[in-house]
Structures are given as C-alpha cells and as structure tokens.
Amino acid sequence: MLEFQYIGKEGDKMMTYGETFRYFRVNKGLTLKQVADEVNSVSLIGQFETNRSHISVERFVHLLDKIAVSYDEFQLKRQGTTRSPAAQRVHDFDYLTSIETVIDAQGKHISMPAWRAHLAALAAENDREYNLRIDQTVQLNRYYDTPTDQRPADALAGLQYYLTQVDDWGQYEFSLYKHCIRGFPVDVAWRMLRNVGKKAALMHSLPGYDEEICLVYFTAITGFIVHGDLTKAWAAWRLARDFCYTHSATHSVMELPAMAGWITLHEGKEDQAKALFAETLSYYTQFHLTKLHDQWQEILTGQIEAYHRHLPQFFVFVTPFE
Image 1 (tube, rainbow, N blue to C red):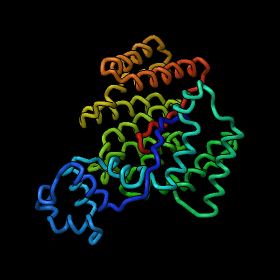
Image 2 (cartoon, helix red, strand yellow; image 1 turned 60 degrees about the horizontal axis):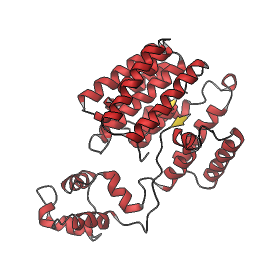
Image 3 (cartoon, rainbow, N blue to C red; image 1 turned 45 degrees about the vertical axis):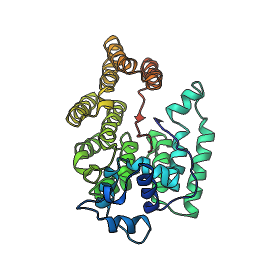
C-alpha cells in the first residue's frame, strides 16, 4: 500500500482555541469590532479569546472565514500539528510505506519483518490505552498482511458496519474508507462511493473539502483496478470528473488525465496511457509545480513497471494533513 503523506512539525506549548484566534486576529491587524458582525458580537468574541466562553462550530467556522485563516493553518499554530496524538502515531506508521518514503529511499521499501514489528508495537500501545483509530488501523493492516486464501470472509465486517452506521462522515471516516476500498467487496465499496456526497454533509464548510472528495474517488479508481473491475474504475473516474468540474477543484482536475491513463494502461493500451500521463505532467510543468511533476513522474513510471509485472498497485491518496 503506497500513500502520499506529509509529516507536520511539532510546535511549542499548545494554545487554546481562543488564544489562537486572538493571535491570528492581532497578527492581521484586525480589531474586535472589525471581526464582529450579526453572527458573533464584540462581547462574545472577546470572551472566546480570553477563554471565558465557548462558541458553536458554526460560529467558529464563520470567525475563521472572517479573518481568512484555514482550519488546517489554525490547528497548525494551535498545537504544532493538525493531528491528534493518536492520529499522528497512525500517520507515522502509514508513512513507513508511503510513496514519499520509497522515493526518498531511492526505491527501497521497508522490509516486511520491520513493518510487522512496527504494527505489533502499535497494537501493544492500543492494548495499553484503547483508541478507536489505532484499533481500526491495526485491524485493517493485519487483514492485509494475511494471505488472501486465509482471510475470514467477515474480517472487515466491523469496519463496514462502522462506516455504514456513521451518517455524516468526517475526515477520519473518509480516510478509513479509502484504506478499506481494496478490502471491501466491489459492490460494498461502490455502494459507499455513490453515497460519498451525502456522507460529506459535515465537511462542506471545511477548507480542502473539494480536493478531499476527489482523492476519495482517485483512491477508489485504483481499488477497483486491483479488484479487476475496470468498468467500476471508469465509473469512479466519471464521478471524480463530474465532481472536480462542478466544484472547481483545479488541482485535482490536472490529475484527471493521469487517473484515466491508470485505467487505460490496465486495458492494455500502453501508448494511449502514456499520452494521458504526459498530459498531467505537462500541467505541472506549465504551472511550475516541479515537486508534484517529479513525484507523479515517479509514480506513473512505477505504474508502467508494475503493469508489465502484472502487479496492479493500490494507492491511498491523502490530503497534506491527513
């Protein structure tokens, strides 16, 4: 399993939400009166900044919009990372097998014994202090580490039930679903993918929402390819295309040709796939996105090599702070 990952830097002492908001407001030269409106009064904001009052999520999101600060930027300042301690541990574990790690190590992957030792350590930590996210990560990775013919038919039933029961998916549920796609039966993965828009009700007001949904579709494409269902892969691509253009997800639009090429390659049309790969790379060149160009060139070259070896690869595409 290969993933795009980014590890944030640890910061200083964690600030409260009110203190962090005041930092950004003052830093931008804004007065309480300038930020206040019919949603948040001067008095309420002042009490929030001095930790004398709590505010609702809706009021908080409105305040961030007023001072033009994204939620990720806010959390990065508040706690030095946008991840909770448990999420950071899961992220560090996933990073062991990320595409960035492989590229940095000049193509060298972590050994399976070393990877299993890290997984065992994560499981032991969860035994000492239970955390839902760590528990589900351990379940999922143990499942993928089990030979296909030895996997119990209902091994992921608990994760499927969890995702089905949660009405409004947040960042964590999207991440979990992406990791489950290749393990779920095709019909289950597809049914959930069709409901992604409905499940995302709580994320509409969060920064990066549009790009995150596109990455869910991109991950599903590679999952259906691994399942050998190119019809579903193309259906997922069309969902991605429609969503990207409807929501003006510019960054993801540039990657649509590459994802189409990914499917086309597995249809046996290598020259056509290469032309589609080149289209995405040309966008990165045109907009001087050198790092993305080089990273995607490595990935797409790897896809061609894996195709020749008859090893379709599953990728989990993640947001920078996931």
